[in-house]
Image (tube, rainbow, N blue to C red; front, side, top):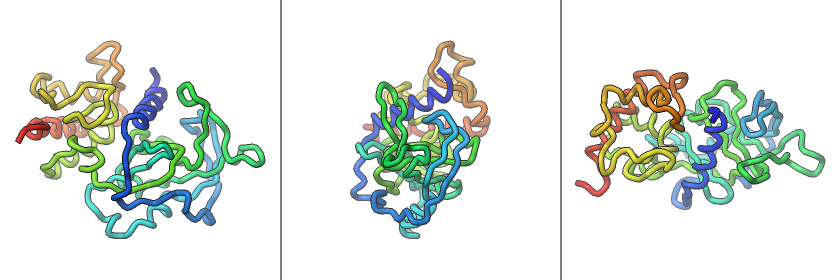
Length: 264
């Protein structure tokens, strides 16, 4: 399975497995946003259409600026993009604010009277309507910068709420760094305290992975699982993560054995 196919597979998994109600969090309904500042943007290779694309879109930063300064300054917040069917995907607020993302609302190649061209998504033929998050900068890490489509709203939520029991109660800088990396690269497939994905194994209960996996090998396994297990679905992260970041993830996982669900 290629990295792109694996990424799109995970995107399907995310939208199936994580339904969220954003009623209690600061939320922007995209149907009501001002499109007057729209511009045409070029995408060299769109991961959904698998070709170069041009869209009419508005800057993500402009949309996020509708949140209050207090909300945008909240520590450990994540930006949650919610699709029209209620499913969601998140990214770090710092990443969303620092990179030039766009909310696309029309494909310039669409026939007259239409806004979008169709594409195959799994077994379905669909479109990104009504809104699609895109990133014109080439080479961005797709794990950090998602491309969700059929968007209806954007909300800000505390990581501890969105990621549930996988979020550490104790938050030193080292633990926070490890958790931020885990929630970006690992939680789509793996769960901690049964919060997270179901593609890979649960990593904390009843036994934490550092209690049965050789700890000195764990960072290497995170970086390049295929070098340890033939036929594994887990991709190599060697081009994305360095040893220090892999060890930060291990540090977070090791800490979480002290925060197992159902224990004091």
